Image (tube, rainbow, N blue to C red; front, side):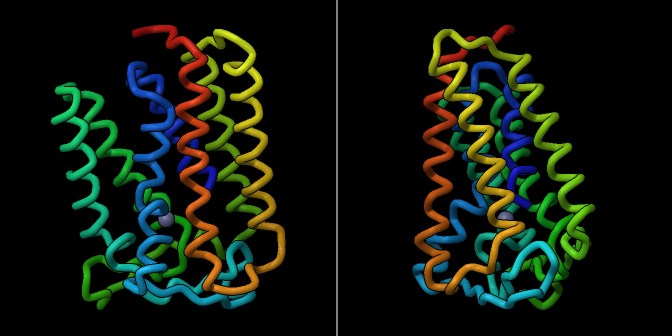
Length: 218
Ligand SMILES: [Zn+2]
């Protein structure tokens, strides 16, 4: 899943107006922010396997530190714990921890049974939404539209950056998603470690846009 994770980040703004969209994106995509770095460090492994599912051409050979349920729970507690230490706001800390965990749940719905439950990777799970391209697009685009709508109703643009930067972000996310899903497989697994770092740009984009929009209820 890709834009579905961002959708939950966008929707989170309504529950915690004081949190920046950048922080919400970071939480919702935290496992996918760690994954490319773990690939580069040689701790996790992915291979390009054209046609392995109609949606993705990636075989997630091993990724227990970023994407096992045990790791996701640990990262959720760590993320929520740091947020609590930082701001002492229980609601938003719980929301951020919940968003980190939501990533695993959405991936569980989408992936083939390749998500490990623990660090041994002995048991792997996944409901396999990705086996159907139309079902994946329907679910993910509906989530994305809902998230974008909720964020746009929960905030008001203060200036042009707030308005056009936000629309630009949505268009960019959609274009990147459709390009990845409908485009050719990536040329090599090696580039995924570096290419995946681009998700940080979307986090920064979230911070940038959010600074130019007022929350409508504090
Ligand atoms: Zn993921």
